[in-house]
Amino acid sequence: MNRLQFLKYCSFASASVGIPGLVHSIYETTAETDLFFNISLAEWSLHRTLRAGKIDHLEFPVVAKKEFGISAVEYVNQFFADKAEDISYLNEMNSRCSDLGVDQLLIMVDGEGDLAGTNKKERRSAVEKHYKWVRAAQHLGCHSIRVNLFGDGNRADQKRAAVDSLGRLSEFAKDFDINILVENHGGYSSDGKWLVDVMREVGMKNCGTLPDFGNFCIQRKDGKGGDAPCIEEYNRYNGVKEMVPFAKAVSAKSYDFDETGRETTINFMKMGRIIRDADYTAHFGIEYEGSKLSEFEGIKATKDLLVKVGKKLSQ
Image (cartoon, rainbow, N blue to C red):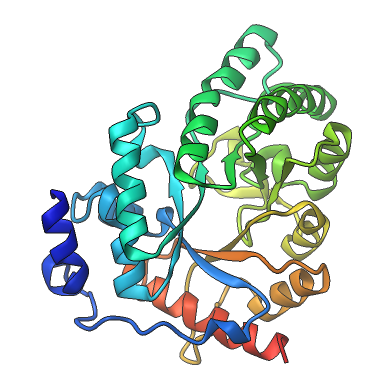
């Protein structure tokens, strides 16, 4: 899609994408000024659509704005993995978002090495592999990159490694005015107390957290990741409560909804109250990860629920 085609697409997004299940009218922006937070859309919510080639990464912002009435996006580096240092591509991302009035908030970074690994040489390499994403985030006007704290060794080993990596990466990112955020993403990073201890030991203003409503599995069966059964899970509400004082973004994970529009796995009202009481007022990023609804239906259901909860808690 070239720039002229993109501008045309902005005026009739639903029809031109041609994805089954799309609502064929622009999703009206809700009066979010009544909420104590803003709403953004995480690109992962559309990972199946993107991987199927039904939309391209460059089309993500227009889909966010025209289909869902959302004017802030959170990128996933997997969908433009070879473009971190491609200035012309990053400029195109900037131009499209500028045309739409869409804010680019952060880049979720995966696949760049284990920041909590015990091998010093490999860990330093992982830190340096994140540098290009810090520079890309600055170029896009983002405030943060999200990183993972995967590694090996025991609890104390990984804590020392994580503090070292985050300290080095945050020191580098400081000169670019970029935050380094850790999401609870499995292993010890899903242990709220462990992650808070890491944050306190790093002790840098641009090092924080990105609490995810889900992702609190500390250990899966046979040490396997992915969809293996979880055998040790941290209490999600305690985890978010512990992480949110360090939060600069929040991931509103959703899986499925009942007939009244409530999420069936996570109590959004309880989560919202925890976050509000911590005086957090930035973005809640929609991250739909269910399978019963289509990605487009799931995003809309999550936004409707967030608006409902936000209005009640903002009274």
